[in-house]
Image (cartoon, rainbow, N blue to C red; front, side, top):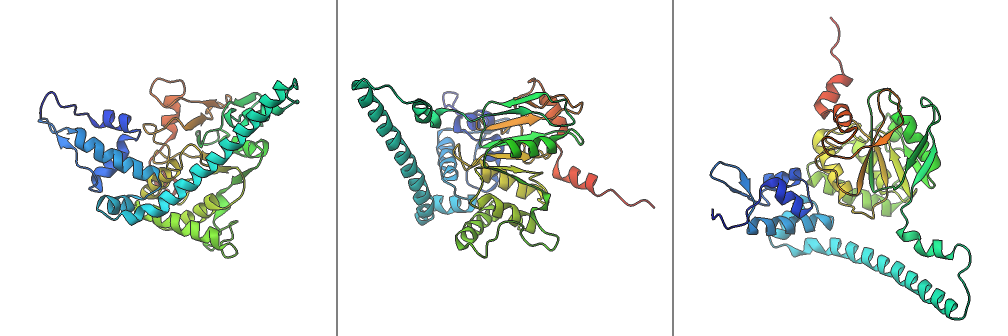
Length: 340
């Protein structure tokens, strides 16, 4: 290996690609990219490997599963058609929104040229797309009525805390005070295994979306189950602008959780905002939290919930890390051995 060749270690490569180091390992495990090895046996990514990984990341950003990515890289370009069609539709919608905003600006400037000032609220409405929506409210019991403020609502927000910390009460309160928001509880799958609120039989379009998403998740390593189908049905249903999900990992094994969170991240910055209660390190991988994600910690001592930055040393980071457990540990705690 030439000392002049810009080879990167996995952390550096992931940072430049805008993906997690775990994602690079998954690409390698699937045979999609093959990093070279240093004399000491460490993985390294040179120009060829970086170009290949960048292509994979771009295909994933378009919504392709890893199985579909492998087909495209293998020469089957037809796998791209549905993804490109969806991307085109998204771009066209954004273009329509931008055209409408431009027309408003032209109209306001024409009014100003005639000496007419903007009416009350017009500038606010003009700038609405650029204003981050936030929320503020008085916290319910067990807090003492302290004020809670969330300045921005991002596509993915994790709510974390130990047992009894009040995180479910916080989540329910968020669903109450945020406009057009629904709380998705643990009753999302019925006792008989039937899917809960989302009625797919009466909505063929929803049924088709759910089937596509489930197939993509299974391609990425998820295990099909009633819990997964119920969750995906709710996520894909037309409805509230914001969704608050109680213990999103409920009923899902580790591989399914990893496939699910990768899918949710793949929606990009314009995805429907989700608040997710979790205590799983497969869902909340602190090393993979991106700029479109936030962490809210409900402390054990019932101090007011706080937003926590996802890096070691940040206030609250160690408390968040302590709350997270692997799916195996969570399953063991949930099903203690019978006493003799």
